[in-house]
Structures are given as structure tokens and as C-alpha cells.
View 1 (tube, rainbow, N blue to C red):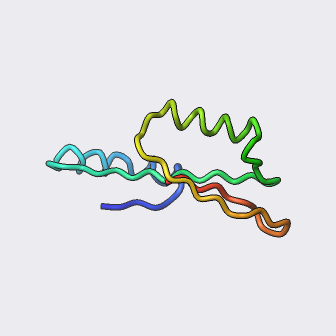
View 2 (cartoon, rainbow, N blue to C red):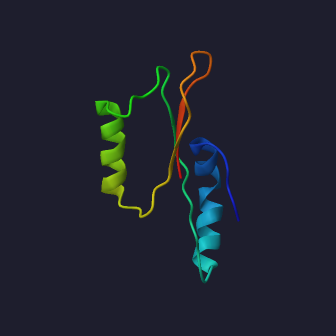
Length: 81
């Protein structure tokens, strides 16, 4: 089973997912949050440090970060896998 969508949609589908998860003998979960900053995010900024601190506190194991170069016409994205 997979899901790719926004939080509101997930909340509507959550009961069905939870029912199937209770019946499964094994489960694997992958969470891919995405953060977008209208003016970009400098690696040495306090905003970047805050994101890092939150991820460390979550202690979810391996974290992969993909940053896209800021271009004036395109919103930059920081994708975390």
C-alpha cells in the first residue's frame, strides 16, 4: 500500500491504513516531508539550524537532504528523505 498526497487527504484515508497495518505481519514506512522557502534558505542561517535541530530530535535514523539551487523565478525546495 502506498500514499502520495497532502495531509488533509491522508487524514481521511488514515483509518483504512491503520486497519490494514494492524493486520500486517510486517510494515515499512517512508516519510518524505518537503519544505519550501520563498527567499531561499542559507546553509549557515538560524532557519537552517532550526530545521536540523528538529530532525535530530526526531531521531528517525538516516536522513538524506536534497537542496535545489535558488533561482529567482522558481521557489527553492529542501526535500528531506
